[in-house]
Image (cartoon, rainbow over all chains, first blue to last red; front, top):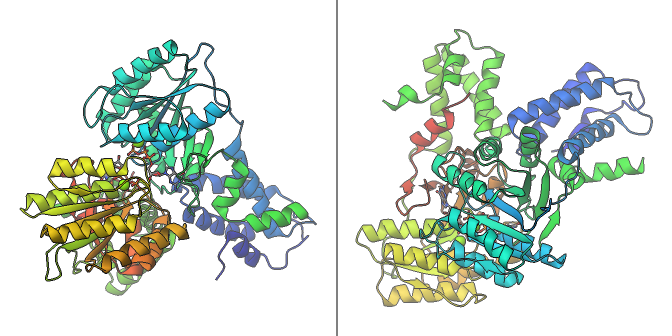
Length: 309
Length: 295
Ligand SMILES: Nc1nc2c(ncn2[C@@H]2O[C@H](COP(=O)(O)OP(=O)(O)OP(=O)(O)O)[C@@H](O)[C@H]2O)c(=O)[nH]1
Ligand SMILES: Nc1nc2c(ncn2[C@@H]2O[C@H](COP(=O)(O)OP(=O)(O)OP(=O)(O)O)[C@@H](O)[C@H]2O)c(=O)[nH]1
Ligand SMILES: [Mg+2]
Ligand SMILES: [Mg+2]
C-alpha cells in the first residue's frame, strides 16, 4: 500500500502534468488524502477542517505548472501553508530590560518540563548568561531532587529552599527566587512547575498565582509531541488558565508525527520556540518550521524533488 | 442507569433526527476520531455500524446508540482476563515488570499498585531499575515509604538488569508476594534501549518467571501509541496495558486499536497522582466516557 502522502497523491494524479488547472474532482480526492494524512499525524480535527478549506482554496486557483506534476504541486502548496502557519514571525527569547529575565515552564504531567529547565539553563549558560533553576514543583515525589540532579548535570545552580513532596508553597518559592537572583547576579530565572491537567482548576489557579507573583517575561507551554487529539483542549485550557507566550515541543526524537504543533499554533497563535529531542541536556534545538512541516506529512523525499525541479 | 447519560448532547441531538443522513454518520466518525480511536478505525467502526443498521432495519436513535456502544465494546472485548498476576506461586513471588515511553506514569503506577497490594495485606518489593533518569530511584523510594514497601536500588548508572535481578532475589529471600520492577522510560524507536529492556527481562527470568509485563500508555497519546505498543510487545511480550491520566480530558481511544491489533488487554487505569488513583479497567465505563461530552 501507499505509505506516505506523497505516494498517495502521486497515485491520484497519474497523467495530469501540464494540463491547465486541477479539476474540482481532483481537488476533492486530494483533499481527502490530505485529511487522512493530517489525522494520522494527530492534527486535531477542527484544525484539519480549517486547514483543508484553505488548501482547497489555494489549489483551485493554481495553474498546473510545467515543472511539477500535480501531486508535487499540491504538496508544495500544503507544505508552504504548513510552514506559514508553523513559522510566522520567528521569535527569540525575550530578555527583560532589568534582569533577571523570568522564564516559567508549564504543562501537563510528564511532558518534559524539568528536563527542559536543565536544557534551557545549560544553553543559556553557554551564551554567557548566569541562569538559576527554581524548584517550584513541590508536589510530585522528588521533583525537587530531580531538578537538583539536573542542575548538577547542567552545571547550573538550583534554588530549592523547600523539600517538596507536599511541603512548601510554590508561589513563595517562585517569589523568593527572583530576589535570590537579584542578590546573586543571576540574569535569568527558570521556574520549573508541577505538571497539571487543564481540568484541574485548583492547580491551574496555582500556576496563575505563580505567574502573578513573578510576572514572567516568558511563559513556555511544554508539550509532548506524542499528544493526540486532546492537544486542542489542553492548549486552550493552559492558555485560559495561565497563558503562555510560546511553546516547547518535546520528545521529538521519537517517531510521532507531531501534528499537535500545527493544532496548537493554529488554535492559540503562539509560536513554537524550542524543540526537545532527547533525554540528555544537549538534545535541544530551536524550532524549525520547515522540518516540522515535512515531518507532519512525512513527505521529505517529495520536497527534495520539488527543490530540484 | 448509566446508559441514560452515556451519550452527550451532541450525539443525542444528532441521533434524534428521525433519519440518519450522510452527515450524521460523519459526525459519529468525528466523535471517534476526536477520542483518538484513529481515522481508519473510526471509519471501519462506522462502516460496521451502517451495515448493521441496514441489516437490522433499525432506525430509532436509541437502537443506533446501543449498536455503536456494542460495536465498541466488541472491539475492546468484555470477556477478557484483566487480572494483574500478583499472586505468589511455587517459584516465589510474582514478578511484574513496568515498561513504557518517557513520562507516561510508570513509577507512579508502580507505587499505586504496591499500595493496592499492601492494602490487601500482601508484601511487596519494589525494584528501581530506572538507573538513568535524574532522581528516578528517589521518586520510587518516596512511593515505597508512602505505601510501605521496601525498595531495592543501586547507584545512578548501575546496570538496570542487575538491579531488577537483585530486587527479585530480595523478594525471594523475604518471601514477598510480589516484586514490582520499575524501568526507565524509553522511546520505542531507540533500539539500544529496547535491547536493554529485553535484557532486563531475560536476566530476571534466570531467577523467576515474569508474571505480568505492563505497558504504561498515557491517555493523551495519539496515534503513536499503537507504534509504542507494537515495539514494546515485540521486545518484552507485553501482557497488559495501564492507561494513565484518564482524569484529564483525553479519552485514550488509542487502546481500541492496540487491543484489536495486539490482543493485549487494558488491565488498569490511572486516575490521578495520588496513591489511591488506580482502578481496574472497566470496558463499559471506558466506552461511555469515549462517547460522552461531544460539543
Ligand atoms: N526521549 C525524550 N525524553 C524526554 C525528552 N524530554 C524529557 N524526556 C523524558 O521524559 C520524562 C519526563 O520528563 P520530565 O522533565 O520529568 O517531565 P515533567 O514535565 O517535568 O514531569 P512532571 O514534573 O512529572 O510533570 C523523563 O523520562 C525525561 O527524561 C525528550 O525530548 N526526548
Ligand atoms: N493526572 C495524572 N497524573 C499522573 C497519572 N499517573 C502519573 N501521573 C503523573 O505523571 C507524571 C509522570 O509520572 P511518572 O510516574 O514519573 O512517569 P514515568 O513513566 O515513571 O516517567 P519516566 O520514568 O521519566 O519515564 C508525574 O507528574 C505523575 O504524578 C495519572 O493517572 N493522572
Ligand atoms: Mg517535573
Ligand atoms: Mg519513572
